[in-house]
Length: 125
Image: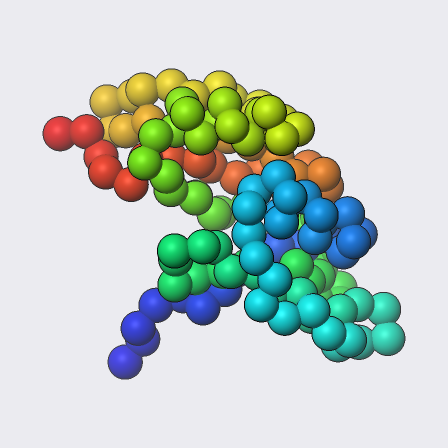
């Protein structure tokens, strides 16, 4: 039986730049950082307090996915406050936080241009 998501792969062009962004700007922690292929390391990050994480790795032949919208939505308790804190750490938002009928969300990007949704866990009723 499936019990959850262990990690989501994020395609990146420079693992060192990505690692700095995801740890320093987003507050993730390194679980694994080791050689994997001749050109890449296996970098797995944990999200403090969560059961799932990210892998900063681009499968061979999937380089065309770098800088695209990723189907990943990160949740937080307060989108407005979290976005403000992230901006202070240099994170760029391409859609500012907004309360919608279905919930509150914003869209930010990483150094490669990969785009992610930041939303509240609970939906408005």
